[in-house]
Length: 70
Image 1 (spheres, helix red, strand yellow):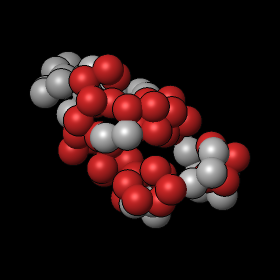
Image 2: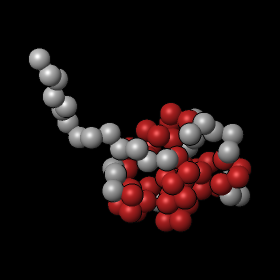
Image 3: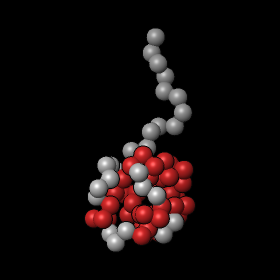
Image 4: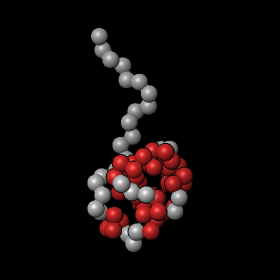
């Protein structure tokens, strides 16, 4: 018997792509709208790599966030 997929397909957004969008917009909701995902998805991805929204926005650039795993 073949298993059928349930729910939405998994999003495969790269962390640098998410970081750039959030920094460009300065807020998660606008970045999520641009990326076609939910704001919760972005917060979960940040939590997975140990980042907070404040750290992302306060960083001097993406190079300062390279210590995180993507």
